Image (tube, helix red, strand yellow):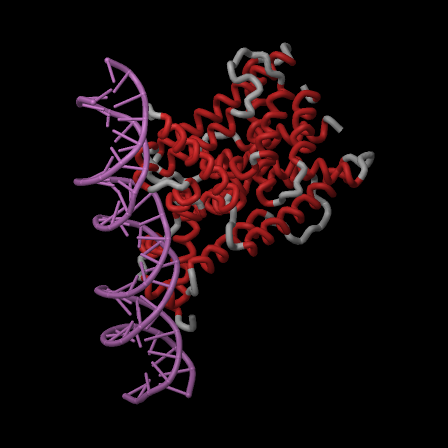
Amino acid sequence: MRYKAGRETRDKILSATRSLIAKLGLEGTTIKGICEAAGVLPGSFYNLFDSKEQVIITVVRQAIDAVDPDPEHLGTDTLADLVDAYIEFIVEQGDLARVYVRIAVSGTKDNSDLRGRMLRHHEGRVSRFAEAIAREHPELSDALATQRAETLVSSLNGIAVHRVLDADFDVALHARSLVHMTLSSA
Amino acid sequence: MRYKAGRETRDKILSATRSLIAKLGLEGTTIKGICEAAGVLPGSFYNLFDSKEQVIITVVRQAIDAVDPDPEHLGTDTLADLVDAYIEFIVEQGDLARVYVRIAVSGTKDNSDLRGRMLRHHEGRVSRFAEAIAREHPELSDALATQRAETLVSSLNGIAVHRVLDADFDVALHARSLVHMTLSSA
DNA sequence: TTCATATTTGAACACACACTCTAATTTGAA
DNA sequence: TTCAAATTAGAGTGTGTGTTCAAATATGAA
């Protein structure tokens, strides 16, 4: 990957992979499909990537990173901020959001690396949500705030999943409803 | 399927499919594997089932039906009943639950029939949840009850998804927490 | 018992998949 | 300009998949 051509080809492949996973899921995404969509031949693909798995991991990493737009973790965000950011991610970053959902749902059979990565990511999100909840509801114990956060984050993912099925699904409405429920039933 | 032999073969195939999905997941489950586990040859399989897809749908459907608290649809089920049934389905039939979610979200490249079936099923679930909510909270408008039901069902699916990633995830705790939130913030 | 039909047999088919290989072409630092 | 290395071309490999088929056999209503 020392020449410009190689870098451009790499980008085309990654972009094609992203939209294919978004549209077809992990199983439906094939090397042939990727190559066609990217306007590239298998030889070029395998010159830049070792395997199908490798491209997919690369794309998934991008998707996971994109979920959390504020890795600085300043500790100033409210629960509503966090949820709004998630809503925006789902609605605006369609392809990446779909990749994220498909990975969450797929068994990730052999690739336990993906599974671990996803779990770690999830835990990080839960603790940020828990901190925000604790900040707004100091009377809650840490354990209870964490439990609430776990319920909320999983539920939000469920809403994202449904959005993949039904493009008209009102993500913002349901996500905010969840937040309201989470905070009001304290 | 008029002879006893046929019915028995069908049972063997369904049972083999169930345990293969549990052991190997959706991808690892092949016709060859099913036939070997069931002690049956491909010809017999295709005499009774049209496709691999059909067996899998049958198995998943059976699992869902087996847990329905009100199969006759008499309108006697409470929201707690419905959620408990869902919890049981996820916890006891985890692998099938995963397949269920997976099919629902999968791209279904050619067969959009499957996707439609899943969407209809989801709508049916939402309306049963909505009816139960309306029964317990007559002061809510139908639209609001439906909206609550949509949030709840999607959220429950999110919890099921997370259970795939983390086997220790306490499905019952979070599901009941959701119900409590749904009903208490009315 | 008869016999239409349900069921089983087991090889074979067509195809899609991830991946490889060799030769040609292009790149850009020296 | 030179030239080693990066990139592309594109046919080809091997394997596993879901599915089909014609022939043989088993079933049970009449």
